Amino acid sequence: MIQRKPIVYAAISLAMFGIVACGDDNNSATANQPAASAGKTAPAAAASSAAGKPTAPIDISYEVIGNAFVGVPVAINVIVTSAQGPINLEFSINDSSALMFQSGQVERLEIADPSSGSLQQVSVIPQREGRVYLNVSAEIQAPDGLNIRSMAIPIKVGSAPEKTTVNGELLEGTDGETVISMPAVESN
Image 1 (cartoon, rainbow, N blue to C red):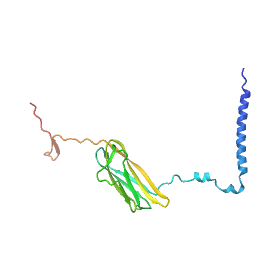
Image 2: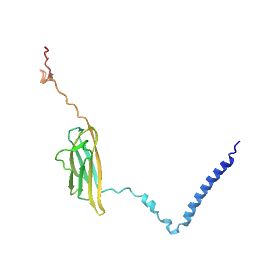
Image 3: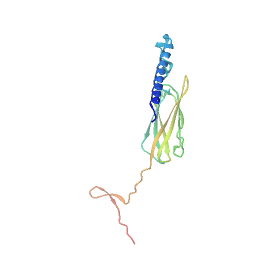
Image 4: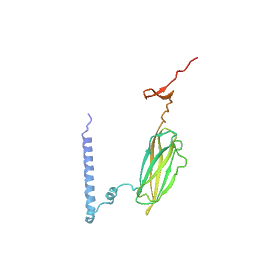
């Protein structure tokens, strides 16, 4: 028969030693701190309370007008707002096999006063079904340097609806109702 009691006692005593050692380290660290710093917040605590990653003072919103279909131009309203200005605005496409600009579309412009919200309409032509992206980048010169806000606008592209062909001719019947006249075809 194997005796396990000494192993169990050794494990318990090591665990208790670790707990006691940790408790002593915390007490000794507190005891070594000067009394004058007791009311100050630690630099790590101040850093953790920061609001997050700084962003450019620019707001960008968008609206895709209507439904997007392959090969059919689609308009996108992009609204850029900022309390500062001027803003350099750029539209770009990463995958030309998925999306392309309509001819004559301005890809880079400057907005002198974006404080009330500047509306820019962009026309693109989807080249495939699925989700495609138009990139928007707004740059503003600030006292601390160049600030940039970028986003990718998703465009859901479906297949174009089938065009139905009407067989026959639309006529108005004797009672005023519209009917389709479908003449019989003679077979030889």
